[in-house]
Image (cartoon, rainbow, N blue to C red):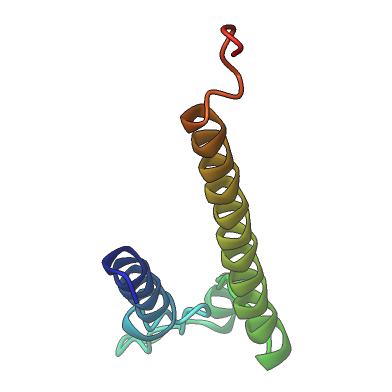
Length: 99
């Protein structure tokens, strides 16, 4: 494996670890239990954003994974296109001077 491929694999590993393991994001905020007394109206008016269940939470992770995969595929095709243009430039296919 070349050094470039090892570097890319390490970068992808770091991104995946950061996205799924190291962040440990809780999407649903839990209401803090206050020691002071609160009325039922105050508690019912408090809106806590976040997924309502495991299905919505899993959907968020699936969407994030899908977005990252789409980005990686697009970067891969962009790299292939750049390699092809470099190859054509090297053989002087696009130059105005023809042999």
